[in-house]
Length: 133
Image 1 (cartoon, rainbow, N blue to C red):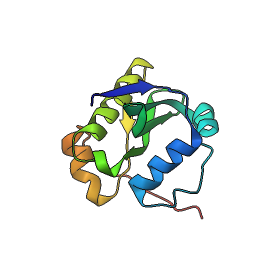
Image 2 (cartoon, rainbow, N blue to C red):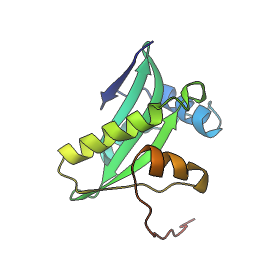
Image 3 (cartoon, rainbow, N blue to C red):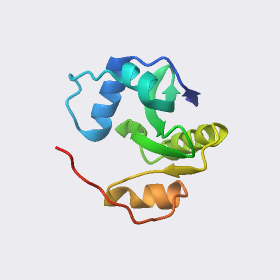
Image 4 (cartoon, rainbow, N blue to C red):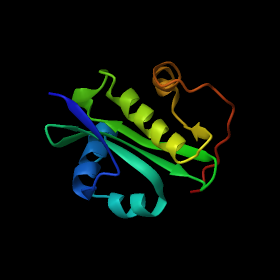
């Protein structure tokens, strides 16, 4: 079945919460207010749909200027390791570029280094992180 990537699709909070929970091992019964958050904070978002079902997702937040940030890259576990995540990130990068952004940032855990560096073309940089809670 072909997969269709759709930018700024109408978000169903329950559907996206279930995808996110499946991708990250969280409780699928907890529904997050995705549509409200995305409309308020995101430059764009991209969904991957297979036969009308959400199979992948990524969002791009930004500073309103030249910097954009990849967040919440999620692919259904049944569709992982087939290039779908890289396709989502590439589509998100194209959207950020079209909006005039010069830089696309991403933070990731060590086990995702190969995906983001080799699979998506990011280069390693030094960064810092401060936990606020």
